[in-house]
Length: 71
Figure 1 (tube, rainbow, N blue to C red):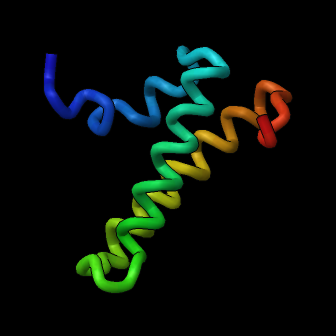
Figure 2: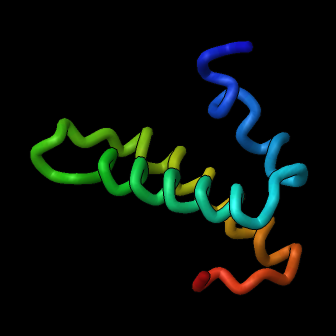
């Protein structure tokens, strides 16, 4: 298995994940987006934008399932 499978198949994996796994991915993507945009850490606007897109994809999947995103 590829070391980068999480990243390679991010969007394709979303429908098959449990709600708990989706929430974990949402938190992970939010952290990565924040770090990519943070001052003093070698900001990367492209990386921040890509992680925000991944975060939106997870949130869209949660909405599609009708799951409260606050939890």
